[in-house]
Length: 409
Image (cartoon, rainbow, N blue to C red; front, side):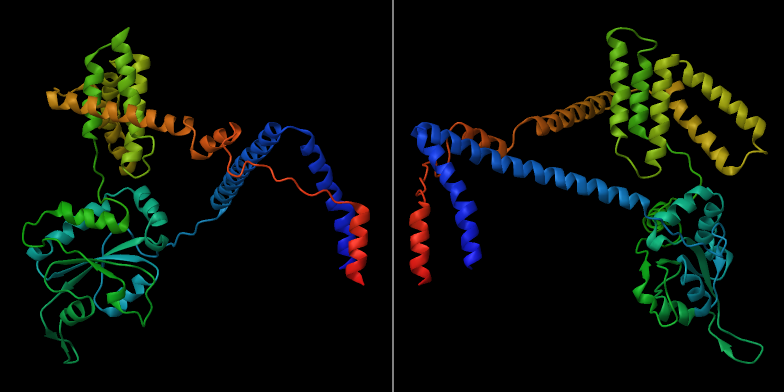
């Protein structure tokens, strides 16, 4: 305690005394100004420091996250063909390391139409789609498509009655009607209950039901759409038709074309989901190349791709053929523009205004001062809480030594 008192006496109090003397020399107005400036700068510096610290931490975390290796399970099953399951063991064996989409239907050609439709579309689905979905899907596992064909009860060679899979379908998988569709999450073991891993398709399954709803269900859980379909984005086709209607323009119409191309680019700027992401890139390229090479670019490229497909159709892979067909479908929205209605034009103007408003709002968000900056400005102007200075008592060294000695006694 005596040592600490000595330190306070020789280091802290002289500094306080010096500061007090310095403040005492100025006028009351100067003291107010000094304290106001100090009060305004400290919170502002703290805020900037906190922001800098948070930004630095975010950069570090993002850098570390990008370096984390990702592991993707490798399936020993053929993911491009449907696998038949006959009993509990078959399904558990698959679901240990894979997600499983299951079709349960009764025996017979007429009852297996939905399964055939799904399996046929699976066969032509590009391998890249399946691999990408496996990396991002449930548990980073690939999805195996399987089917259970429920048959009539019969006796086997040993004279035992076999129920044809009905009991397994109803009691274990929770099937209430046929056909039935479900997604089974991977990671099961021998003691797992199916009810903890299954998600049933609850849509219509009567004869002739709409398969598009089922395919959306499959996409929701697997992360990809079945098949090798070619896509167009209707709104971008409308913009492309308006774009080429100006021809090889100059002046104001040229600026309008650039504005339409910019609108599509902004619309695809933060699009990461497929197929919107890859299709958006193709639209952006078509707009850019048309501006550079003229409005006949799309027509010339369409003819070139048609010849390429005709001459190499038997030698090119299915995935490459799909890529060429997708490019051609987008180029045709430029080479064969649609007739625009008044509603189409209004849609373009509405989207343009919304994007401009978004940009302006974002700029204002960064330009306009926040509450902390406004309060700092008020502090600099002298509007400070407790702005009246408190004059500290000057400490006399001899008096302090005398008091300390008395207390010690």
